[in-house]
Length: 108
Image 1 (cartoon, rainbow, N blue to C red):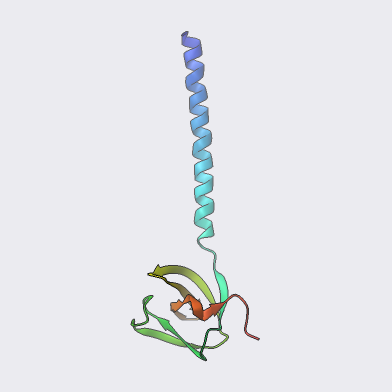
Image 2 (cartoon, rainbow, N blue to C red):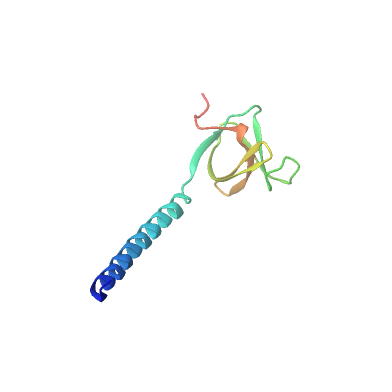
């Protein structure tokens, strides 16, 4: 193989690697920016009052109590066994709430 062809292959390989690097950085920055998004949901489960817990566990310390129909922003989620929990914020109140306590639709 001639030195000229070998040199061109290395240049081509370098360009492909550069394109892949740029694509990876672009996709990573999109993924990071999407994690900053919140979703607004409404407290509509059974009952009129909803407890925000310090941890995603019904036995955890209660941080706050919110009224039925309160709009909250979901900023995180986790699963504990078969139970899905949302970390929510509203004004100065923050805490974990079971997923079955919320709805995307406001109460009627």
